[in-house]
Length: 370
View: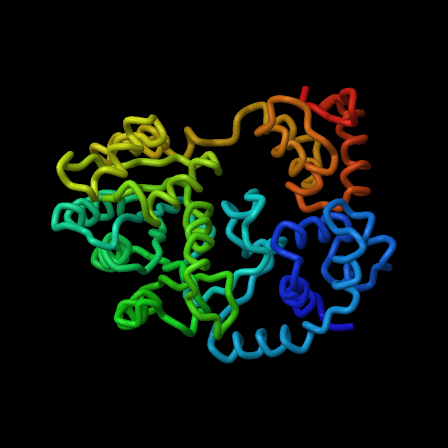
């Protein structure tokens, strides 16, 4: 049998088994290698898998391709991260459709304390470009990671602005990391990598930037960020798609208001008027909203969580954190999915937490934090 990393990539490459099912399989089986060692009957009983997918998994011939991908990635200085690993971006992990595998080239910390995504129209005006520069410059004191899509207009301006004030910036691609699109930005990409930034993609080397890859790319930009800032956007386009995705992920969104006669401000103005984004007037307002104007001591873990820390294991705390975001009861399968712990392990942990008086069982095999 191949090693775990090869199995992880091979699993993600199987036709019909997308990111969501990969996570479901890992949740039930515990590891990618264990998935391939499972019997068809076992796999087919996993919710969402069925006999067709179970057969496809056990007949998979993607191992050699996976090995080639990993070798080529290593040769080009690209690291490969599976969503269960500590190196995988923490902001992406809870998102149900986040990529199971990501490819990264660079030196920036993907788990930076503060990550800001800035996107907007490809037809940026001088106003939009100046606003981006000011935002990035004013936020530089927080040493954030600036993320964008390397596209023309606002995106590339965000990367340039970060380089100008010497803070790391990462471009998320809709292609393999060996295909820079637009190709005119290759020199900037080199500067980004040399300046402790990098490139990120869910696609292996050689994948071209097909049109359907861009909305998928946008979900990574939305998911990896603590806050998304929209600077100039039309009513329709990639920036609004990213905003909609970020909204579905319950991310904090800010939109820069613009001239009502400029069609590339219509999207931002609409987001604000529909209360789907906070109006961006200055960095101070964003800092207050995100509590970034407080000291690190003031943002310590709440007392209740500290009490849990004293009597809960690391795995139990993972489950407690899931309940912190769920006001009503939650099913065991969903807990397993969100913590990426096997169902049988989750069942034992829930029992321990119930004995400790941390959670209680509800009708319908649901559980709730006390």
